[in-house]
Image 1: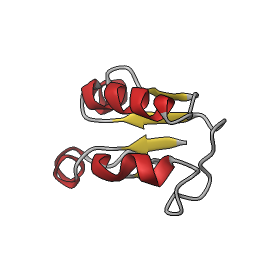
Image 2: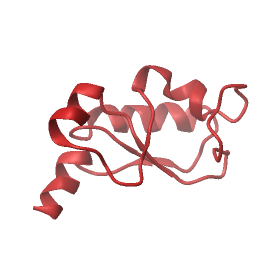
Image 3: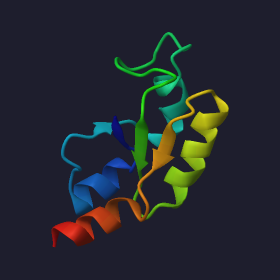
Image 4: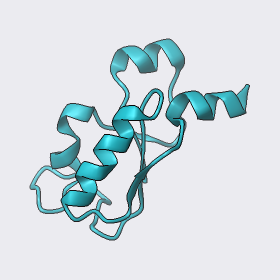
Length: 89
């Protein structure tokens, strides 16, 4: 599951990430924690979750936070959206 945590302004300026689920960073934990009554469909403690931010800083911190909640397979895309976009150019 690929999660785009960039702000709406960043997505509007730089484009969408095809196939990604958009979840704002400020609600990420309760939207992905399977124990939350507000979690998104398809999340689970053993689900592979790849977080993408603009450059890779906030996604690294968010992945560590999700791991502390028991989502042990949470990680982030090295270089995040800008690295992915560089591969597409």
